[in-house]
Length: 262
Image 1 (cartoon, helix red, strand yellow):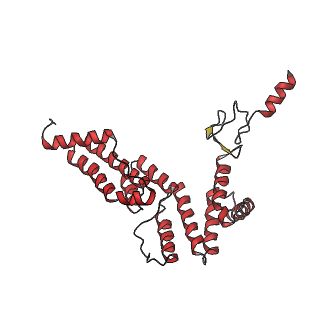
Image 2 (cartoon, rainbow, N blue to C red):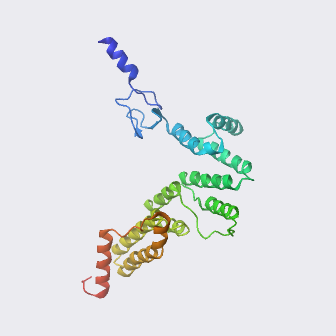
Image 3 (cartoon, rainbow, N blue to C red):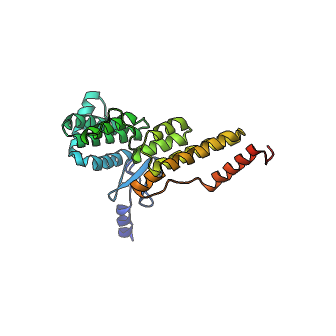
């Protein structure tokens, strides 16, 4: 019996932050019941937030020839420069800035570096627009397209997460500004739809029925404008308003027509 208990304890997972035993092994992001810090699962192992971030970013930087030993060297050098332990994000920025210099003569790689910079900025809650514009300019030169002032920028998953957080925080204007600069993919249009919905609900609380119609119909007009583009690029229609928003739109129109008492 004692051997079984010892064997079980040896197999029992521990928190990578506080080294306390865990009742079960997490299979996704989970807070430790002892220290409260998040535990992440990567490649079958339990790791800290910083280690998970390093693993994830090394997978992205592999195309540039950056391996774990390179990351550790950059972090060590940066820590000596700072006189204290450099953070993961500081190290990543150092690596990406070095890659800009290294990729100066390779337009394709340089474009990708700037897109990774946009992703890192987005993950920090910072506006990625400048990096995305630079990536589009480089792409334009690479493809012999005039792109001194790109008309559109491409938003990836990181940038869309950044926009989503802006929307959830109520910063609708800033979120919309970035989305309107982007290629109108269904994912981009869906965020615009949600912003229109949020604004319409605010207008409803203020009994501004004209604004309700303006916001909801404004999205419909924009989505219709880019309907063919979505079908041609990803074979997917732009997202439509939800039933609750359509109901709100009907109510607003009725109130404006005077058929419903205010």
